Image (cartoon, rainbow, N blue to C red; front, side, top):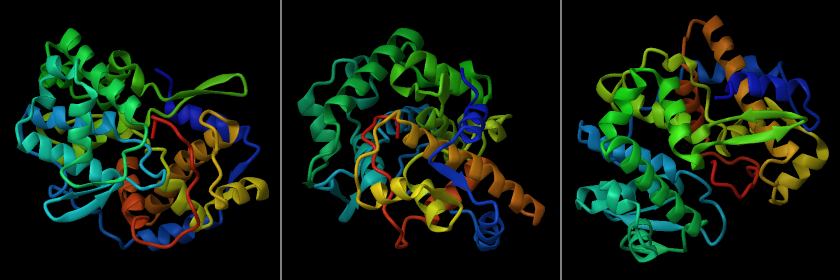
Length: 316
C-alpha cells in the first residue's frame, strides 16, 4: 500500500500547476476555530448498530463518486429532494430499511441493471445517475469479493483489520480493485485512496469510535481528496492555480483523470489540510485530519464559490 501523505508531499515538491499560499492558512484557521464539528447525520444514513451498518457503508463508499454531470441526478426520499452524496446515502438507506437483498453479497454479485437502477434511482428519480454501468460493475465486484473472501459477513472484514484503520484500508484495497485510487506522476506511483479511507472514517464517525468504528490509528488517515475540499480551499485563497488551470476550471472544462493537473489539485488539498490542522493545533484546537475534512466539507455545502474542478472518475 502506497503512503498517501508521502504521495502528496512528493507531488507538491514537484508541482507545476498548483501551489499552497502559506499566508492564507492562518486566516482560514481563525475562521474555523470556533466552528463546532458537525454531528453525525443519522437522518440520511442507515444505522442499526450492527454489522449490517458496515455493509451499508461499504456500499455507500463503493458508489460514492461523481454526481455532478448534468442533468443533475436527484431523488425524492421521504418527501425530501436530494442530490449528490446525500441522494446516494438516502436511496441506499431506503433499500436497507425495505430489507432488500442488497446486503446479501452472493445476490449482489449477480445484480442486474434493472434492480440496480430501481435502487439507485429511488422512487422519484430526476435525471440519471452518472457512470451507471461502472456502478453496476462495482456492486458486483463487492458482492463477488465479499462472498469469496469473507463468506458474505461484513463483521469478518472489520475483525480482520484488528482495530486498525490503515489495515482496513489495506484489506479493502486488496479485495476490491475499484478502490485502488492511484496514478502515475513524474515517474512515481502515487495514491490517494479516497473511498477506502472514507470507509474507515465513516465507520469511526457513525459508531462514535466504538464497536465497528473503533480504530487505534484513526489519526493516520488523511483528508479525503475530492471536489469540495479543493473548491473551498481555493475560495479561501489557500490553493492557488496557474492562470490557465484556474480559467479551465472556471469554464467547467474537463480535467482528465490521472493528469498532472488533477493529481496536483488532490495532493495540494491533502497537504493544505495537514498544514491547516497544525495551525489549528497551535491555537489550541486539536482535530484529526478526518474531522477537519468533515468541517471543511460541511462548510463548503451552502456557500457560493468558484466552480470545482471536473474530472470524470470512479475514485471520487
